[in-house]
Length: 251
Ligand SMILES: [Mg+2]
Image (cartoon, rainbow, N blue to C red; front, top):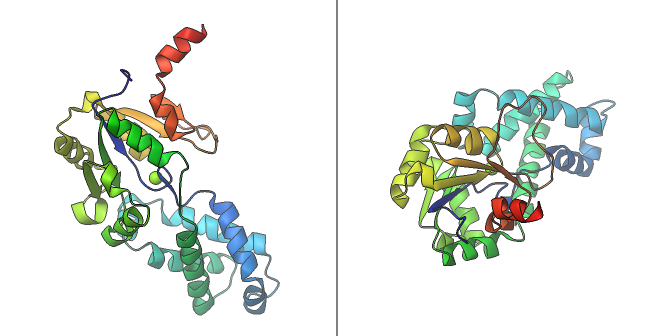
């Protein structure tokens, strides 16, 4: 596999583990489990309206990069504020119910974390091929370590770097420089793989890495996105395919 680079940096959430994907579906499902409580508390509650208000609140909440960096270390607390604000958007206030629903969502997500089916095989093939691997993930140390342990991932990586432990998170350039330094690899010899266009494509490219966008649901680039990934993959195992050679042999 001569096309492979010296090193690959991987994102964790929604790249190796399916964690926060499809929020519209997930919130709809969670709220339907709490239909009775919602209808008792919010007169005339329409579950779709509650879901849309929560999603609008979440979008607004996570938009400020400095605030987002702070709250990434307390996702459960952030969700309580988001649901409370979602209720407020509907002219309603019930902080207890908001907290209960937010916590139930956090629990549901936690219970549903799952490895992407080809994650382990792909990581072990890359390792056997001699590629140096780093896991570079944002979030709280304990939270991310628990996921790494639950799915027994530590053994695949030469370096694991978590925002809450390192003190800085993607997309700060330090994060990438530090990980590359730990792997002893110059940026031009490295790929970054992940689902976040800013963190795993645009910033790494600016620093000289190749930015590979993971798009497991085949959503395609969002309309208006200026990001130009070096490659878009729908499966992690696609990393093992020499795309240029495959294209050449197809023509
Ligand atoms: Mg991610």
